[in-house]
Image (tube, rainbow, N blue to C red):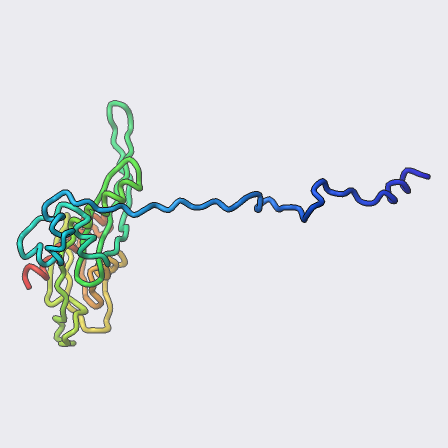
Length: 234
């Protein structure tokens, strides 16, 4: 018998593991469980925080009416659980030192509930994640009330969709004016300014901006100063 006939009669080679179908590369073991970060339990350190946790203070209006100072971000998270945070701008800070060039990151974050509250904060660190966390805490501590209304002579409705009157704010070289607009117009502003106004709860407004509006640090300060005047003057 020739060598070719002996190979044909022997048949195809059998796999070593004949007990079942071959396992694919992706199914080499059980799936790994992703690590989920547990929520940190807030432990108040100030007297105001202890009163909030005990239920003696139930709203941010009570703190503002008494003229108390908020020193913990957990107080704002407890009283305003619907606050949303949004990263507005990130950047790199480079500085020349005796040991060489040092690099740090900075982040600008806005916090708002789209219903009359807005805060802006900045954080700096050698790591981007830590810089954003610092900016989040700073934004919570800087949360301010915004008075909504309808100050447009074209609308004259009772809904809270715009500002009650014309306001003006300045931050650095940036000067911003916010004027009341009729319902249904929308926010006539740039993209970054429009996002801040949405977080504050505005739906319709005219805006004018002068200066270097590309610098978000100055622009956000001007917007926040405008919206704070609605509560202080109203």
